[in-house]
Amino acid sequence: MRIAVGSDHAGFELKSRVTEHLKSLGHEVSDLGTHNTESVDYPPYCARVGRAVVAEDVDLGMVLGGSGQGEQIAANKIRGVRAALCHNEFTARLARAHNDANVLALGGRVLGVELALAVVDAFLATGFEGGRHARRVEQITGIEEEEATK
Image 1 (cartoon, rainbow, N blue to C red):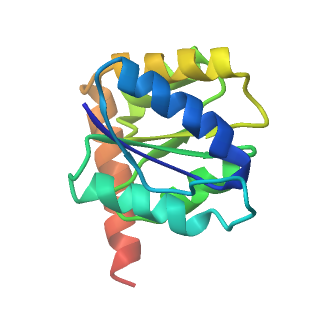
Image 2: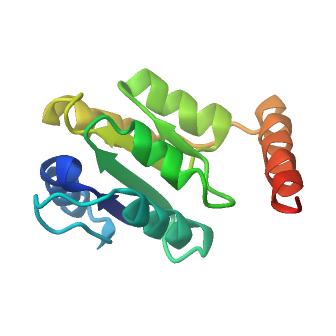
C-alpha cells in the first residue's frame, strides 16, 4: 500500500516510528515532512498529505502532531479527505469501516508508540463496510460539494 505521512515538530518522533513500522510491513511511504523537531506550523504538512490522497498519488494518509486534533482539522479542509483522529484500535476500525476514513490522525503526546502502532495496524487492516454507511458517506460528500460551491 502507498501511504503518505506528515507531521509537525510535536508529531515528528512518532511519525518516524510509524514510518519505520510501515516500511517493515512492506508499505511504500511518502514522508511529506517535517523532517526534524524544529517548531513548525502543521497545516501545510496536513494539506500535503490530504492532497496526495485525493490525487490518488497514495492510497491512504497519516498526519501526526501533539494531540492530532489540529492535524485532523487541517487535513479535513482538503475536499475529499475524511480524516479521523483515533486513540485506540476500536476507533480506528470504526473510522475505516463506517466512515471510509482515508487519513488517520494521531497524537504523539497522547499515544505511546506501542498503542499508536496498534492503531495504525487496525486502520490499515480494516476495509469500508459500505451498505448503510455508504449512504452516510455520500451525504458527507454532498455537504462538502454544497460548501465548495458557496
